[in-house]
Amino acid sequence: MQNDKKRILIVDDNPSIHEDFRKVFELDNTPAPHHGDLDSIEAQLFGSIKPKRSSGVLNVELVSAHQGEEALTIIKEAQAIGRPFQVAFIDMRMPPGWDGLKTIEELSQIDNELQFVVCTAYSDHGAHDFLNLQNVQERLLLIKKPFDHLEILLVSNALSKKWELARLAKAKMEDLEETVKQRTAMLENSNRLAALGEMAAGISHEVNNPLTIINANCSILQTLLRTNKFDEERFNKSLRQIQDTVFRITKIIQGLRIFSRDGTNDSFENCEIEVILNDTFELCQKKLENSEITIYKHLPTTPLSIPVNRVQLSQVFLNLIINAKDAIENIPGDKWIKILVQENSKNVIISFIDSGLGISPEIQKKIMNPFFTTKPVGKGTGLGLSISHSIIAAHQGQFNYDPSSPNTKFDIVLPKYRTT
Image (tube, rainbow, N blue to C red; front, side, top):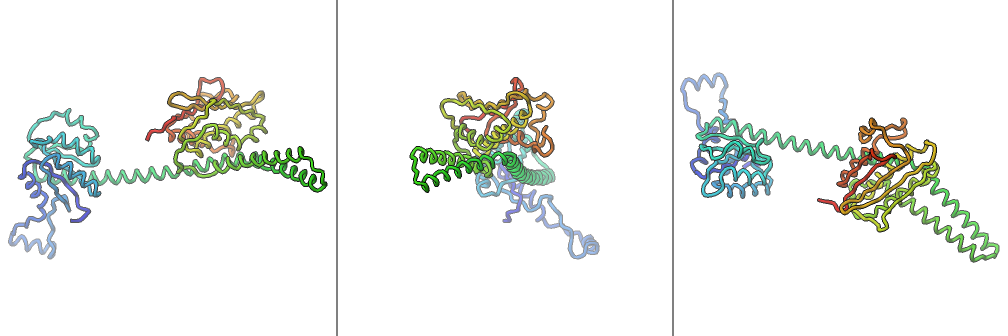
């Protein structure tokens, strides 16, 4: 028995029906009648090889079940060994067990690709009964008994081919989805690195300035030791400054390390929202100060930990902060960005509000589209909000612009608990 055989299941309580099906599919083995001179003419036309008669369905394996329950067991075993059936011919009346409708309902829950043919001489069920079968209508045909042999062959052939094409389409779709997933991950990584590059000048200053402080305090300590003018208070002050500055650099490096790595395949873990926000601020604080933008944080008194992909959520936060900075840095007057974190029984709501006066209705319709940007050429990729939206969706959350706010406001709603 070859694995590439078409597997067809016959479900009928009448043994003679099973024999009829076997005769239908064994037509290829029926010897051709001898016609004397006609055979010699055939030999002259076709040579020594005569054309074979074909049943229309080649390489078929028939399996019999006499009750619906037995058919269910066979289908389960076929699925378990990876040799599913393409077509099932099912009788409508099969006392004392399930009828054909019940059998189809049960089999379709195990195999959502199996093609069904109901063979019946009775009208036990109306059209609405068949149409109410969930997710089966497009895989269901009805043949009245007594059936024609050619009809069975053609139906088997057509449904087997339909099954094969459906499987091929499914495999192609899975390949396409995987390709889209890979391309999306590449775009996310590209956008993250672009954001990091935009912050590079500020980050460089954030590291160089503390190093200058450390160097100056080391010189003071060396002078005190060299001149034997030990001043305990001054000595301790310099040590504290060095320690604080090292801690400051460590925080910057930690933010860089978290943000720069590819977290696409990271699992979700409980993280404090405030910690992720602070890590993000470390990367852009100097940039905001240079643009004279003030950051205000309004956080709950009790730390909030929720299941997130830390790298990806940090990317969303940084995208929103960069967008806000770019939008308001050249506007006269007070420039500020507020981050408001709230919670209810099910969700955590993180709002990013800046001193801008909102987004026009025309732009609102486009801001979530990939590659759409209002920034000058070379200033932005147009991927920030689109990718942020997809990241939050992957977190089972919502990412929205709030048109009712007098200032520019984006809301991130994240569930406190993930559903599988």
